[in-house]
Length: 353
Image (cartoon, rainbow, N blue to C red):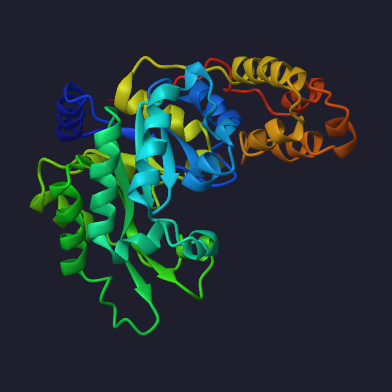
């Protein structure tokens, strides 16, 4: 049962037009095809692009990275960079392109972003992040937001950047700069020695720090992220935060997004997996005509039926390299026919509200 307190909290947040449910930006995952698929499972959640670097947009002329489907709205673009002028120019590009929000990546711990001195590395310099916020807000009217960790750990720094005092200073700096919404991954990022995947698992979750930040900055829209895989967790977090951001759980189990859609936005929401796959097949055919390869579209379907009878065969068919090279979209229908259809058509979740 969803507690009455949670329902009251949700209704208050809806009145503020807050992003109660978001799908995290994930490199190599949340491209425009993935976002189209996720939108079929959730009409309301805020979607994010993969991180787009300022260098790619300004110097690599890769403006195709800002392409999206109109059905994706609301959709935010996440920028990676550390130069306020460049970030401001790219924020203006994002607004011109029609994005609903522009987000600064201050949370990614990958080697790529460390070499570029952005992502989680930026947490070392709250003033620079604040400068980016101000510069971007001066060049666009859409919300400028920040996604960060609770801190960073670097060998030899004596955990200077992982303390609660530091997190308070960091949040204070960007709030003073005008940032009104923060997406907080409730783990520190360990820079050096851990892969991005390990950084999502090994550092322990510290939601208590996130809760403290919300109490210190009650007017700040605080969206929490990290390890959220079920409605029970979302219920507890939404009782005190302003929203939840779902990462790998959304990609590996997109029906979780539909559970959240029904629980948070619309109790009458239903979805039909056959209809979703049919829409995606038609969508794929459109992009194949434009020169895309089928694999770039079908890879996002591989986890749609995890744990269900026929899921393994579903994945095998979608991984048939011969047919993928032939751009044969009929394999999507064929793969779907392998899945046990019991209780999958017009599914309406039965969790009581």
